[in-house]
Amino acid sequence: MGDKKPSRFAVWALASRPHTLTASIAPVIVGCALTARLIHDNPGLIERRSRICDGGGGESSCTDIDSVSAWTSVLPLAVQFGLFACLIQVSTNLHNDYADFVKGADTDKRVGQARATQRGWLTPYETCRGCVLCMLAALIVGMVRLVPLERECFADDSEVIKRDPYMVFIVASSLFNAVAYTGGPFPLGYIGLGNVSIGYSGLGDLFVFLYFGIIATLGVPYLYLTHVACLIPTSEAPRQELLSILATSFWYSLPVSNLATSIIVVNNLRDRHTDVGAGKKTLAVRFGGTFVKCEYFILVVGSYAFCLFQWAIRTNELLDLLPLLSVPFSVRHLRAVSFGYKDGQALNEHVGGTAKLQFAYCLLLAAGLGISCFSVR
Image 1 (cartoon, rainbow, N blue to C red):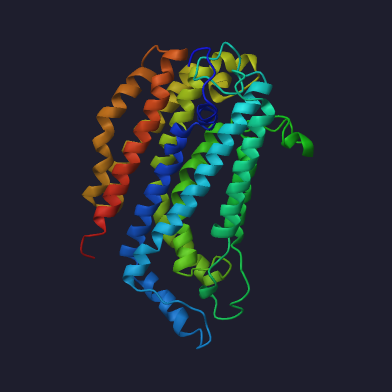
Image 2: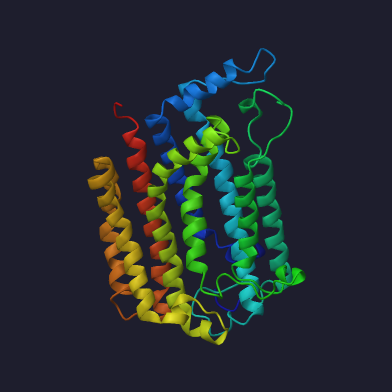
């Protein structure tokens, strides 16, 4: 952008990094397709709510569902969960912009894209304030739309709002991790946790694998099973059925997790020289460039090995091989990152390219899951 200060809108767009939101949106898209597959493979889920409604009595506010409304009910859940995921990521990005600057990781020697706080376009206070506003919005979406269980799922005490303890944990831990990823004096310093940092301690890869992979992918199926199919997680029998169904979906979240993690891997490979001076002990700093190049290879190739595993061992469904269409796109990045000699700023295109690879893979995976729903049971 040169030395000229961009417009206020452009500055906030730079700080929030909307181009990174594909990492939040892609797993939600896969989650939608997974939910459609669950409805297709488990017709009893639709009948379950009908049985609950029939047993709820004439005064119950229970709303029965048919096969059409069962499918259309997925979209609102996906929008709500996707909005929550995007708000968490923007919060993480804004706090990272602030904390990397105050901790000395973002300096004039930065080889990645310019950061708003580092360039002086936003003060640390302004960046923190934006982070807090996004976190409050995420909290509202999470606690108001995602945490309360549907009243219609209870035959008694229908006026009592019952909350899902597992979703409470996901919302709370996501909010904490948004600031703990980079750490810094605000806000963790006020509660004696100023030295806590997921990214600076080398746990960033694990955080991304779990929250931007497994949890982000299984969020929509979980919400459907608990809110629409009424598999209440606080009751023993429904919880067992819930876990059994989610276990099947879990396998589809692994390649999404792999590719989400590969984005942060190439990012850390690029930044490892400046991260050393800031005390940022990512895996690239701890174990060196060769280690993370191998990690990148395993993550990307492992995602495609998953397709073959699903097809050969578990499903025999040719549509599970659809993500293999993105292999030619992945080869370019594998050659440059795992087998090439690019370093520093030269890796910038492969950070964005890996994000695009993940998005393409997830679209193809979702397409395969969605199309398979039209097959005869």
